[in-house]
Image 1 (cartoon, rainbow, N blue to C red):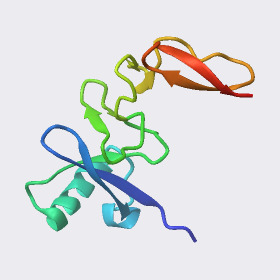
Image 2 (tube, one colour):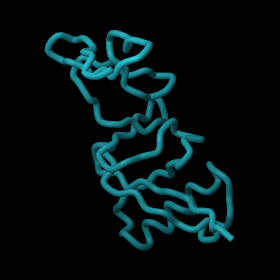
Image 3 (tube, rainbow, N blue to C red):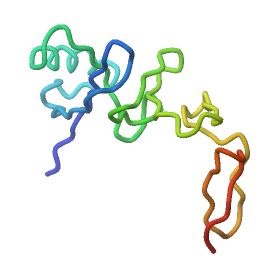
Length: 126
């Protein structure tokens, strides 16, 4: 029987994720999100220190849009975890909390990479 787990992101004072841990659902009384969050945060603080900051994250992206990873930031206005910005020209999509190129990636066959200098997609493979 696979044990279900809850995931909690430790934040620094600038809303940057510095650690992500798992806790058994049993330890948070098998509560669903958002009821599970204060229980899990209290447990995290009891282990890591009362001065630590924690938010629950969803491995499947069921809430807060994206699973938190080390180096991600938490955007309170979107209530979302956001990956580091890959290129200066990319724009955050507020619906998905994902970074998007200012020019759509070409569709169809081929392998494309973003070229920040030319702000365009460059085909590098078949």
